Amino acid sequence: MRSDSRSSSMTSSNETFAVLAPNLVVSGNLVSEGNIHIDGTVEGDVQTVHLTIGSSGVVKGRVFGKEVKISGRVIGSITACELELEESAVIEGDIHYQSLSVARGARMNGNCQYSQAELDIMVLSGKKPIKKAEDALAFGDVAMEATTTQKVAPKVKTSQ
Image 1 (cartoon, helix red, strand yellow):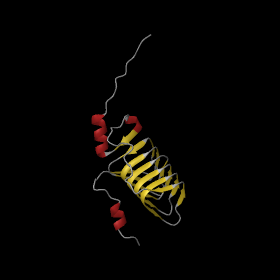
Image 2: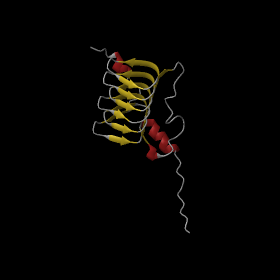
Image 3: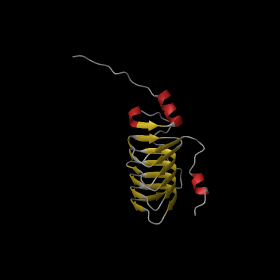
Image 4: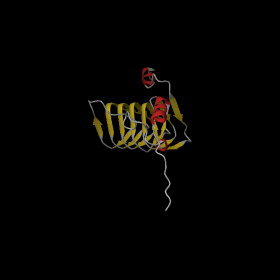
């Protein structure tokens, strides 16, 4: 039996929480300052503080997070401060981490690189606003910042 200390460490003080259901397919990037739980499929990059990919979850893109727990499949690179791979996890890509926990049965096909230095997990949002609303789905404070600081260039029609 597991202690509850692990699950409580995967909970953010930010109450923002998004769940992607098993039958949901998202094409585009996900950016959040809170928690994301993926049981469906994401065809794009995911950046969040706390990420859980359930056993039916699939991410086809890069993953960036402070605390990442994977039971499903990731086809792409992972950059995480704390990474936990459950026994059903399948990783097809490189892993950059500060702390790594791998359960017996987890499968990895790629390079693992430990980093003592702080990892850049904010590469998708950083301090820059999202360039195009079509390129990412944003949640919480990130969404509000993106919509208030985003500038849209007017479209000019020319006739010939």
